[in-house]
Length: 87
Image (cartoon, rainbow, N blue to C red; front, top):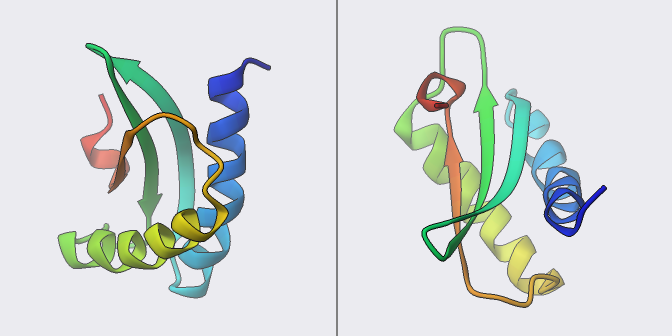
């Protein structure tokens, strides 16, 4: 497992309990570098689909937890999204 996969796996450990508490499923996490910028992404889902408000709610909670753990050295953008938006 490479470094980015380890970061994504640890992120999953942060997102999963938050998502499940809200009635969502965590589908996938990833940590990728695109055009020199790092992105930490989580894809969540629920029956009937995820709304923007769902993503915002999970993002706010997870962001606070990430700030307290502070385990990623470089600057990154965190994204919480629906698997409907996955490429």
